[in-house]
Image 1 (cartoon, rainbow, N blue to C red):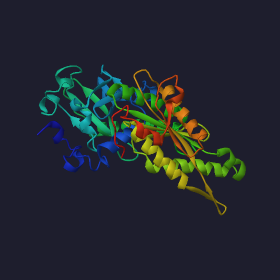
Image 2 (cartoon, rainbow, N blue to C red; image 1 turned 90 degrees about the vertical axis):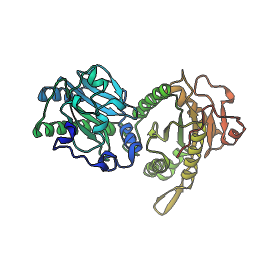
Image 3 (cartoon, rainbow, N blue to C red; image 1 turned 60 degrees about the horizontal axis):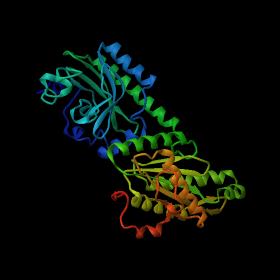
Amino acid sequence: MSTADRLPVRRDRPELIAGVNCNPGGEDARLAALHRYEVLDTDPEEAFDTITNLVKTVLEMPMATVSLVDRERQWFKSRIGVADQETPRNISFCTHTVQDTLPFVVNDARLDPRFAASPLVLGPPHIRFYAGVPLRSRDGHNVGALCAMDTKVRQLSADQLSLLEGLGRLVVDELELRVRAGTDSLTGAMSRSAVFEQARREIARTKRYGKPLSCILIDLDHFKVINDTYGHGIGDLALKEIATVCGRWLRACDYFGRIGGEEFVVLLPETGFDGAIEVAERLRADIETSAIEAGGLKIGVTASLGVATYRGPDGDVNALLHAADVAMYAAKKDGRNRVRFCLSGQLPLPRDAVMAVAELAALAKPRFSKTPYA
């Protein structure tokens, strides 16, 4: 029996270790909750560094981290006494912490068969003692851990573990503040700055792992006419309806933001242009069948959509969104309430780069392998 299993603060419960109770919806839902915070691969921030400093000082530990557990890595938003910015998930202590709702403590890693041969124990940073509390999102997913570590055998009292849990809740509060700051108050979509920053991170991830990335630009048709005819209150309802439609169709790992008055963008990670076209057409059709009801009136709305897929390695956020913008304006020019696709994700764009959905069938093969969108 390991040291961790003997601790009264941790009970071995198979249902929790399987992630059923502590991560509803499974690993994909947990990762979606993590990515919603838009914090991976961001610069250090004083708020998080203050918390790790408190852990180090109060618990008298040489190492403290705010660790976020991604699919294949743990990445440190804040770290003291740890040189690496990230480590593989399969050798991490924190991957065990996120599988439970209770603190995870290992008093002596050399006596625990799960960690005795770990490079984190045998080599730098030479972890001997570990205590971690799960960082639980507001929707009930463990996205990471607040950790305290030492190079010697240690024990923490119940009061010390309670203090660590309280500091962990402060980390989650800071993450939640990031979400609220990056949200459009009218529609609940991501703000322009937040979605642009997320697009940069997704492009970096695409370059790193070689997965496709697509985006859809959505522009509400005749929005000025709606405002002038029915008033800005009805216009606001139309914008909210767009957000509602997108919420019905998009996956948990997708990103939806408002970047202008009546203009929205959808980011589709790991989705090639064929999957993006399918999603855009679903959105267009659903928007067309929706209606705003006010004062006994039913007001129909439509939208024009432009689709573009990232093409590396030299493309950037501006090139991707510009390509989608060109396609969207082609949809406007062709009569609105349409989907158009731009073949290029780079600048400058050739005149014949924009295609109608019907013309896609003429392509022998896509530029990316097909990624099913479900």
